[in-house]
Length: 508
Image (tube, rainbow, N blue to C red; front, side):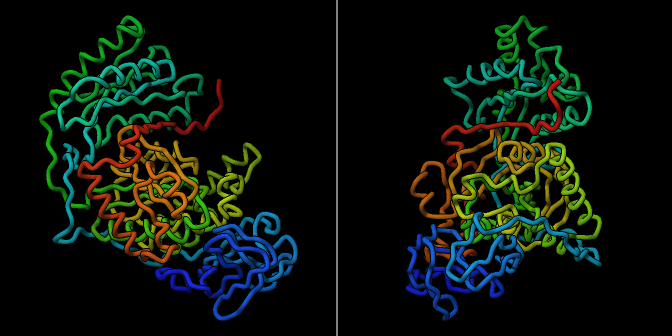
């Protein structure tokens, strides 16, 4: 939390945001000119360089090799001597992986218990006890060879009137499913596709293959009448598969039309937490606000799922410290180690993660990015850690092992069963998902003004002095309840339905 009061209108002494008394840098609230005097905790500093909004200013002399602290945590070392008032960024900060002395939990924390009374939303109850926030018919391609036909099937319903409580027929095209080794890559794809087929937001689904691909549709078929399997090779080709799918979907729609929303406690919300196009303000405004929302949900025995493994590196010690037990902490660290081994195959480090846009927005390296990103998980106890696309079964805060790249991260969260996604962005984002509403939260007001059709909530009001972290967190929570009940998020209105599985193996 800032040491200055960023809930008030900025005054002459509020040009910089100091996040922790131990910090050696502060954050420019707006663009600052070279030569401008600024004050932090009563001390005046004259800026030696122009500093863009969200970027860092040195508050004291930092020797070459000296620690650079933000949030009271190490985010890098000076690659050369840095004087007070200098712009601190990639030109004078060296990345260094940190070896932590982890503080493992010494006692077991019980799972959260649902309170006697809680907020409710209107959701679709499913036979397995989960609850949908949407009611879709899904057409999922087993491989790239069936992707176009899956899209044709879904598009054939665009001009058809559907029952009010059927949200649509949506396609899951993708480029995977063949040309891959049978092994971990195929297993992960099967887990991903299985999760989007058997999802609380899906009333019924079709798995569509070409017929000869590695990812055979027979893997997914079993008892029950909410899933049908078709191949182009056995249905007469593209047109025959479209006609056969429409016959199956006709009966799916008839049944989905009888399904009704019912009042449901907020404990049935499984919320995916993601960020994309982050900037320096993300860790000050949008992410802490979403973290407050996550804490509210966890307190109701709902579930909030933090993801993006590369974007907890350098901050994982903060999650280890508040894990439910040592076993959960070690699972979390195991995912980091396996991800590091994965990156080593390609000769890259976690610091390859920050994008040019992240850096333009003031994020210097992955350590700084991670320290802000973990704020989405709030302060709740970490109750579990699960692998990519693994079914989420634990209430409270959960971590999922996913890439930092937004499309596969959302695919993993959705396959794990999240029925809502909250997505923070500093630079701007337009991503959605075929069957899960994605609520966008901007970290700064400039992005809100620049992309008004894509953003649902402006957390930039925190830095503008117009609202507190807690107020925006409650606003996010209240909006999520409305979206869970049927209100459409901006990404849904615009028709964003991106789906990208995580490919981990070679192309054969």
